[in-house]
Length: 128
Image (cartoon, rainbow, N blue to C red; front, side, top):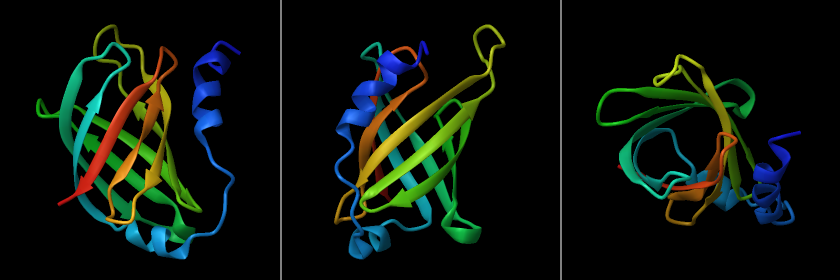
């Protein structure tokens, strides 16, 4: 239950889900430029690769400039793209898991929030 205080703001940001085929179509497979701010307020950049798989399940691979990767699995619901993610532990060897929720914008960008249990980060993915 320790994640509930962190994830509650994410859940409150979710609008009433409604079908939006145009926005779902705006999400495309390919490479995205990533810009964000971690829960401590530090900025970061990198890339993300999105691939659609069977039954509309998406695979996501985030890569930072140092070459570290974070992998995830996502779904589109209405105008939202949500993904769980996993990263091997880099600092103390403990793996990191979390969730990201993005709004699909009409121009194909994804803008949202994410958490791995210690606050909220913000992130924008822009198609290349």
